[in-house]
Each structure stands twice: as C-alpha cells, then as structure tokens.
Length: 449
Ligand SMILES: Cc1ncc(COP(=O)(O)O)c(C=O)c1O
Image (cartoon, rainbow, N blue to C red; front, side, top):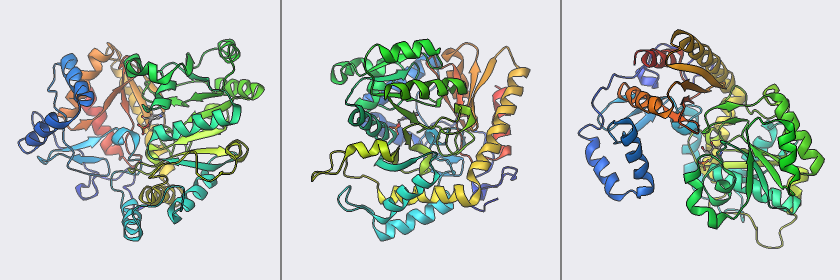
C-alpha cells in the first residue's frame, strides 16, 4: 500500500493527519475563530448566511460555523486548534485526503511552470495529458473531453452536447436529483423546490422528472410524451440521500434511450473517482454494466481543485463539428493547469498506489459497521443507503432528528452533513484514505449521542 496515505489499519498518527479527533465540546467558535465569524457575518451574502440561520432555528444549536484554518488527510483544524475529522471530505472532494503529499508535489511543480493557461486557444500540457488519462480510465468508448471548473460546468457541457446531437431541448431527470445550481444544471435538478422557484422564469421549462427507480412503463411514457434530448441520472443520488436503483433499471434506461436516439448522461460528479467502491459506477454490475453516452466527473477527480469534465464518445462529441473560428463552448479557466496537475496526481494514486482498493475496503467496513449500528439501535436508526464510501444512515424522525445529531457530532469533533429530500439521512462521504480507527471512532461517537 502507498506511502501517500495511511494504510486502512494504521494506528492514530497526528503527524499524518490520521489521528482520532480531540473532544472539543463547547469550544465552537473559539476566541480566535470569533472575529472571523463576525467578519463573515458582516460580508457574506445572505444567500449563504440565511441557510445557517435556518439550521440554527430548527436545531436550537449555535448557528455559527467552524472556521477551517488547515487540513491534512481527513483532519481539519480550526483557528483555536480544535481538531475535527471531516467525514464528508469537503462535500466528497478530498478523495485522497486533504493536501495529499503526491497531489501537493505535482501541484507545486505545476505552479512553478505556469499557473494559468489560455482556455481553448492554447492548450497546456497538463490539460492534454489529463484528457488522454481520462480517455484511458473511462469505461466503454468514452474518450473525448470537455473541461469545466465546477461540477455544474460539466453538467452544462453535457446538456449542451445533447442539444447539439439531437436538436431537441427537453430533458428528463429524476425526483431527488441534484446536478448543480448554474441555470442549466438547476433546470434539470429536482432536489428541493426553493432552489428553483425564484429562477423559473430564467430557465423556462427544460426538464420533467419521474421517480428515481420508477417502472419501465412510467419511463417510456415520459420519454414518449414529447421529444427528449437527454436523460440525466446520478448512479447514486448523493445530495438526494445516497439513494440507489437496481441494475435492471439502468439497463432499461439505456434500452429506452437507444430506441429513441436520446443521449444518456451519467452524472458521476459525486460517485466518480472511487467514491462508491469502483472508479466509476458506469460499466459496473451495480448499474447493469451500462455505459452512458456522456459521463460528468468533478469533485474527487482532483482531491481539491475546481476542475470538472464531461467525457463523451467520439460519435457523440463529433456532433460539435469543427470550429468555425471561435470555440462556441469554452471559458477563461478551461482545463486549469493546476487543477489538471492535481487530477493527474489523483489518477497516479489510483493507477499506481491502490487508492480505489483502499476506498473500497473503507466502504465495505462503513457499510458493515453502519448495518450493525442499525441492528443495535433500531429505535433511532432505520437503515443504511448507498454504496462504497458513500453511505447514508437513515434516521427515525427525519431532519428534526438528524440536525441535532450532526451538531452534537460536530461538538465532539466529527464533521457530517444531513442529506435527502427531507434531511432524513446522515451522509458519510469521507476521504477514501480514512483509517479504520477514525471510522470506528465516528460510529462510537454516533452510538454514544
Ligand atoms: C451529482 C452532482 N452533480 C453536480 C453537482 C454540482 O457540482 P458543483 O457544486 O461543483 O457545481 C453536485 C454537487 O454536489 C453533485 O453532487
């Protein structure tokens, strides 16, 4: 196993960031954190602060967030020196752990070569190498890449590609889906009405949604009621609460799309890069071996830099045609060199240092221990969702129960998030490099609440 992250059974080691957290009761926010919180409250747009206020109202807990000062592996420190274990990996991004040494080395080297490129006009070496690496590791014939910065960009690229391919503009998505908040991505996201409602006039009527995992007749009826450009689906609904669907359902999707010339998009921004027990869900038994026409990736691809990609088959991407002068889909930071260098380092960790196997071992252990917890405490916990290192613990009582639990865990040094349409699950998406000791400590803390 690699020296770039601790082995699964490594004993606690503070220098490697793999120690169990300090118990930090009642020190949030501390004296050094306080001025920063005040600055934040003064200058952050209420679009973001309002969310904290609502959280405080419903949980009765302190509404202030913790301030991140530094992070290593799965550990995060606040300005007061309190140490936490982040069981979200920063929304599923820090797949190889925060500031993984190999990623830092490659990023530092890139910073010394050049920090910024020139979008579509003059490609950087790292971007070219990353496109080739993505084509190598992606399943099926997915081999041509459109880069973006965040996950929403990859979704925008996929939707635009589907329109270019089919000449249609209507999309089909699934209830509970989350694809990002830029206008195109938002227009196909179903997760929570308040996200969409104020902007409906800007988006038009782009998408319809049917239940995730619905029967084939419902799918077919939705696809036949109007011409559809693309079906967009998360192999596991992440923000929607770690929900899975049966392999046969994905096979049906593929079959129905093929019969109608509809583009099938897998949004693997959350599930990709080893998050759910395999490099990608596409092509695995979990989705009936289905490979989509377009695969969106981001988050864990870089373990911490905003670079995303939409990867398509040559036949699909070919519809964009040759440029007539200016690129019609591009951006200033397209394929950012530093982010591309980070992604190449993550791919090296995958191909040469066993990162996926490490995440799969963690994921199995997470699943087993959470199932045991549910069996021991059925009054509080109803079940376990998800796959690999992407797990949701279904809590009796919904958001009214999960929010106080998340806050209590935070006060004990564990960072977790609620997920699901009703906040009904506590979601765990830690660094794939989390140790058994760290995870077992989290389960013990949860049980002791
Ligand atoms: C499945 C999925 N797609 C798209 C996105 C949007 O990514 P970003 O927040 O980087 O725009 C997310 C973010 O959580 C996601 O989980």
